[in-house]
Image 1 (cartoon, rainbow, N blue to C red):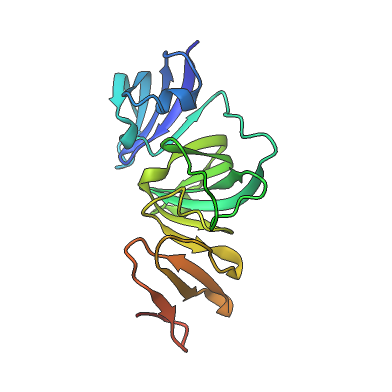
Image 2 (cartoon, rainbow, N blue to C red):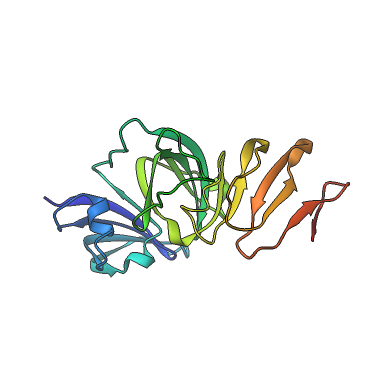
Length: 210
């Protein structure tokens, strides 16, 4: 049965139909190009939307994927508030982990290219005042995420992303260098940098590189 989808890419958003059977996760995780039909393409360069008969997207070109059949999260999951920067988009929502998940001792690694978020808000990074799109669930390509804010260390889920651990908690088992950056109001946040650079606040609250 065809499903209606919204696919967010680096250049624009495609609102389209996918005729391939299966759930959206099954489709985007299949390792094949995603073929979109009856597309309305909304470019990010300010040009008007236009109809396109068919578009084929490689999985790596998909930043965020949404369908009219929301994905079910894992049973008995604990949900954590997260914010991710993925390409030109800022996405906030909640991400599931299983009860007892310890980022420092987790033996299980995430599988697949996409991470499920629920209660999602999507906006453009360079147009914060332009409003946002609400989605019940969305699949985010974890390999193209640039920055993550969450209340626990999620470096295993988002390789290469800068990690900001909110709430003043020290990350455990980050797998990369960890830095502490002063936040507004004198509070501190922990930042994991993918390249191993350590950044620490000086006495004036500005960041210095060690």
